[in-house]
Length: 578
Image (cartoon, rainbow, N blue to C red; front, side, top):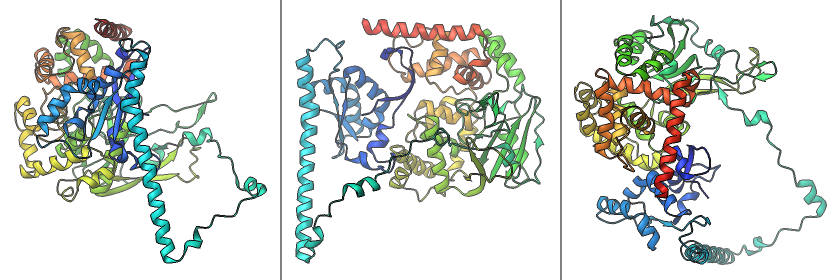
């Protein structure tokens, strides 16, 4: 049993109140790339997926797994309801797979909701549908499996008889009650400390690495750069929050567990991560940003970081221009300083955002960590502790974490789809292989560098969407975060809210999905308002929408956000009634 949605925001119990949803890794499970306590390949036996709550469930399934249909790996069941619910996506999938679907394609069955609220069908009609399309074929498969197991056992028995070792099949002697009692042990209940044993990186431990390398001041004021608003807000996935000395200690009986990294960590002050062949520690102070090199060549290290943060671009004049163009942004600018767009390695950015589709931050980070370890170059180990360690300098660190560089195209030359699936990339494995092949064919990293030199972000987007697994949003992420396309606008649910709430309530015009025309219209709303570096302005507004930054926003902005969210819920509810 799976929920289609794994994470979401929702107030109340209505489906139309669901926002910002992230699907469960159902495809990864069915393709054997999701490890569930040693049962990694169990999902490969799946023959049918039954969507259990009617047309609403079917719509959510298509919303999050349309690529699965398009890849020819799943298809609609033959029943009338499934054919009707999945008609549109199946028509597209048939065009994408002119030679037909794969022989072992999983059937997706949509059955009526059993809720009494779904009153268009009687109880008996619902029961008949479930028996016909879910239980009967399922039980038939179970009986077939049982028969195969019996035949397998009989065949093995015959083979062992022929070898003359049939006596080894004798039953084991019965255990006495006392023996049974003595050998049974209760499963220990997990202690609270074991439940929270999450590896953490402590600043004092990092200080012992490369002690000859001191902290170097980038001499950049807070209004020009704040790593806390830049490094962990969705542009990249290679930075880890470093805990300070107060971690794990108690104040008035309460354990300090602040600075939890998520979508934005405005309360974190230090980070560690690999960039190319170096490992940096970055520290934010009240007046500047500092860095310390933990691994790699010292020569050029500061210049590398300055280019990464794009410090050649003055941010304060841009904040002023944007604030004059938008009074709401002006309020945000006074609360959230130093939001910059990074200049990432384009190969790393491209493959990272391919892995980000239909995914959440912890799984993306885990995928990319495995990707680095398999194909990258080992850089160094950093010490880790666990939640609840007393932090005593004399006590040994609990363990260590290995850091690797991001793979180059040449190091990915030997990667194959099966190997990538085993690493947990699931259906994205094919995209990685296909994109690698096409990128090599077009000249490798040099091709991406040519895109960086282009002055037309739309042309760059059009070029990037030719690569497997890259749609318009991912293309604009790659363009903005690695190719200096400063007016590229990645459009996601947060950006949809900003566009509809603050600039044009009619921009979606009742559309249920973002078409290429609507996507461009949303981007143009930002580009028309912010004449310079519109993608940067968009990112500042995006950061303000993240839950971890609510605490720094003024009450009137929070009220606007909450009122709009409530309005959207009511509008969805009315649309559903009509």
